[in-house]
Length: 119
Image 1: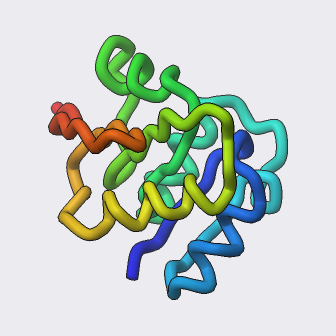
Image 2: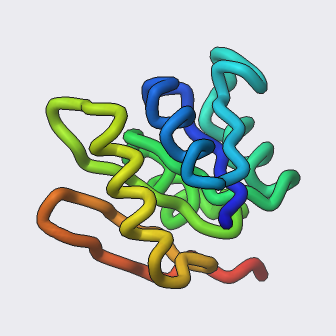
């Protein structure tokens, strides 16, 4: 099972559903509420967790601004937000290897792109 860091913008019901499925889940609201995006990335890296978020800014930070990336980033594009549907998207993505990838998850499928490698 995967070690996951859920961004604060995801409902706690997503965290509960993923934990029930056997994943090691840490939610930013519990770990460090109101942390900025760079701090979220740093925590995901330092704890070797896959970052799960609804925020496209993380892609911008790692690709354009050179922020070191965590093991993987799962960017969920889900509107309207539904905690159980978000958990299902995460579990679908985790059915394949996500390490080293930025994965855009939608109800229509996934797009994967390699994360930048550190210099």
